[in-house]
View 1 (cartoon, rainbow, N blue to C red):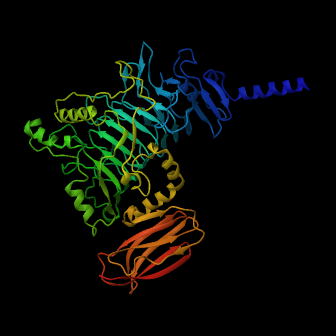
View 2: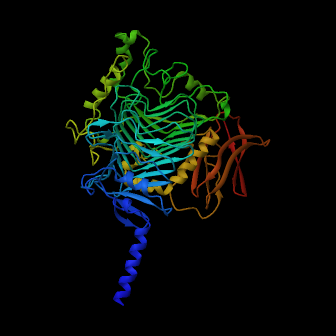
View 3: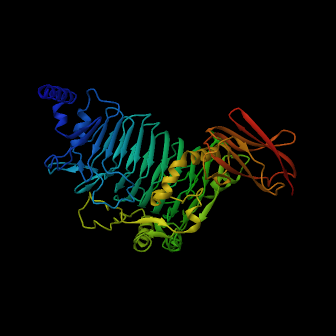
Length: 581
């Protein structure tokens, strides 16, 4: 019996080894089902390129569930740049939120490499749908900084980052010249987007063609010298920024030259963003507003190709600028920087053209400006972000308005602060950007504003209901309303379809309509006058199984009886309400 078991075991091992080339297996430490655990630099006896070798050689009978796992605290330097051969998943073996982690291990580090006779600052060519999770990415080698890391190699593909740490870049962390690409960024921490003698460089994304999707959710951004998300004049099919935190962004957080037609910016925190003033003579040729206006948090321009159909929802965001930054335009004008006295602030929500378009409901019914909360979050552990680093932010933002400037934003370090530590990142993350402001803790549809990873208990609850929240955002975008006019009621899932009488009734000018649905489905809630003419669409789209409170404002209507109708799948319920002015 023992001989039989030994024979079976031997045959099994030979079968497994036959699936892989021997050369590739030299770089694999362990096989866990469809997962290959990749040896790191130290496992390889101080040899680089293990991830590149495995991705390049893994071509025979590759299972659909293949995962390349990088070891916690491992270093994976690339002499050569990996290029995907198929849909690719790379996962670090360190779980849990990176902003909450306080253990002894570190995220696996993916970087470039200097081998003495040559060097490579590192890159990863994604030619297929690619997922990167639980990894620290630094586009640099031991003694030099690179320009970008993830570059596209095809159209109509996607790149997903989850729970990753990105630090330092001369340009951005990902870029694309191909079209129709989707980016999904969740639970990531971007820090020290600095390193090049250029006020425009130092951010997350840059694109040079029309794209499909940009979805940024629960990410934190700390210190950037350049344009953080550079959409330029390239339309995306969908752009979503929800529950993100931005702190000390010297240049624009979003370079949108006004071409987006399906974008939402909701539940975010913007502290000291868009600090660099705008002047008619600067270094941003091709990256400035078409009418040479300052660019605020939001920017749109007249575009007759989309016109009434364009949708832009900006609602329920926290904004704050430290008062010490307010005199930057005056300083530049007094000193006639670049020979100009026309410097103006970009620390604004939107410029005059954009504001006028958002206020013109007749021409632009789906451009919706909701709530701005002007309040500084009382961050729990910001370290020196609003003392010493505030001075650095102002100095850099002032100096680089001069076209002759060669300034680089100083690297912000709290743990590894010695010269030459190009590849090191501060980890565990040394700041705590949770806060205690009572109004901000529940103001984002009963959740805190900004990146929810700083609030792990609330984040878990949010994850359980996020489909309902996104349904609200999509509905608000589609109907030209705000998300704060529609609230999800906490509690168990409803057992039946129900439309309640509005309250108060009669009302002037606002009232609340409550309804519940037991299963997710298509929901339409509309208001009509007694002639049967539609006067408002409150909800129109796929909606999660929840109970809802919907605010209806009749300020623009005449007194009288109105009918509200709720359609859920094939069921319709109507009720009457009275507006009395």
